[in-house]
Length: 288
Image (cartoon, rainbow, N blue to C red; front, side):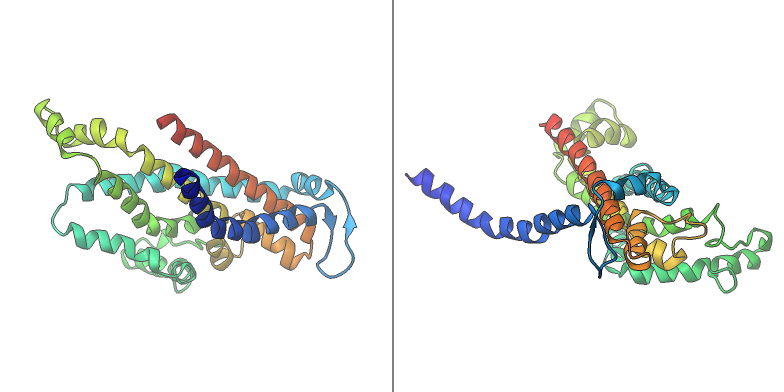
C-alpha cells in the first residue's frame, strides 16, 4: 500500500513536467508536421501538397548546401571543440598555479550574449577597420589581409572560430567528471610507473565517457540551432557559404513566405537531433 502511495506521489510530481512537455513541445511539433504538408504564405488559405514541400527541399541545392554547412558545424564540435575542451580540463585538473582563476575566465564567455560575441568578431574580421587585418599590417604581413567574411574560402571557418570561446562549459563538464574519479586509481597508476600523460590515458579518459556523451549532446544541439553567427556576421553569404539549416528555415519563412517549406526543413533538423540523441542514449546504455 505504501509502495502504491509512493508511486502515486512520484507520478504527481511528474505531472507539471509532462504538461509543459506536451504544451511546449508535442503540440508545436504536431503543428509543424501539419503545416509542412501544405503550401502556405502565412496569411492566405492553405493548399494541401502532401509531401511536396519535402520533395522541394531535397531537390533544392540551397537546402543541400545548408545541410552540409550544418554538418560541418557538427564536425567542428565533435572533432575540434570537444577535444580542445578535454585537453583544457586535463590541464586544469592538475591544478597549476592560478587554476581557479583560469577556470572562471574560461567560463565567462558562456554568460555573454551570443549576439554580442557575433558582433565583436564581425568587427575583428572587418576588411577595412577590423582588428585582424590591422594586426597583420602592423607586423608587416599586410599581404595576408583578407576580406575574411566576404571570401567563400574563409567565411565559414571565421563563423566557427567564435564557437571556441564556449569551450569553458565543455571543460567544466569534463572537470566535474574528473573530480569524481577516486584518487586511489591515480595512486595505483603511479605505483605501476605511470607518469602524468599515462595516468590521463589509462585512468582519466576511460572514466570520462559520461561527460563526453553529455558534451556531444550539448554541443551537437548548439550546432543544430546556431543562428546568430551566420545571420549577424555574414547573413548566410557569400553565395550561401555560411547558410546553415537554422538560417535556411528563417529565410524560407520570413523572406520567401514559404511556411510549409520552412516547417519541412525544421522537421528535418529535428530528425537530425533525434538521431544524435539516439546515438548518445545507446552509447550510455552500452556503458551501463
